[in-house]
Image (cartoon, rainbow, N blue to C red; front, side, top):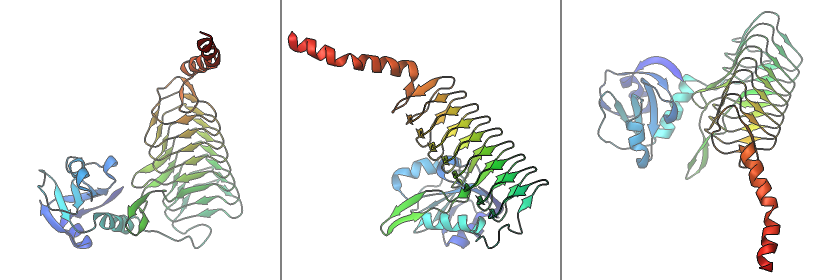
Length: 310
């Protein structure tokens, strides 16, 4: 997530941290470790991940122990880096409560039509010629392009299902990302699309979602994809352009599905898949391979009977 440019000295004062390193540096973003860029703030509170954080692209690392500072970086040392990071996320992407059907800060294009009980949060942008059916909820900071249709009961931009385990129990990360829906997208009824934790959840232009589809935090769906009913996609997975996913398939987190891949119904996808191929089964494999395996498996009882006779 981008933030207004701010000096590391001010960040240290806000979170009550000790600054080690160049005090002239400035922060321009706030991101999880796997999404960081130069200028970003990130955090680490487990020693085995220190090296990954200190050698990442991040410029400012909130950390719970003093250590050597890599060149061009700053350490902000405090007792609880996670809480410090979460407080910054809340500061720069505050939680707004929806108090009216359409918030005053929403920007809505011409020729849009909203049926009864549509709710639109703060800092939402909706393009031209969009149709939102009854009981659609658009959470804060969502961006919707032109010619988008969203069917009844769908929720866009709900918080990421993303928690940190603590001695007191699970604590939710404050999701400061957003959902971006590009032009000419259609989303079916009762779909749920979570915002990113620090990056964005994206649905590419021309993509069509059936009813009861769930996209978790930070999922990126390419252009002109077809996703059938009851598909679930876990966080940070990338689906490239022109992919077809049939009903009840489940996709694991942080994988990539190649362009023009076809995933059959009820497939369980646990790893990245190449584009341009048909997959089915759980775990999902290329169809021709899976068919050969099934054909061989059907011969197993006869092979066992022959072994016993021998």
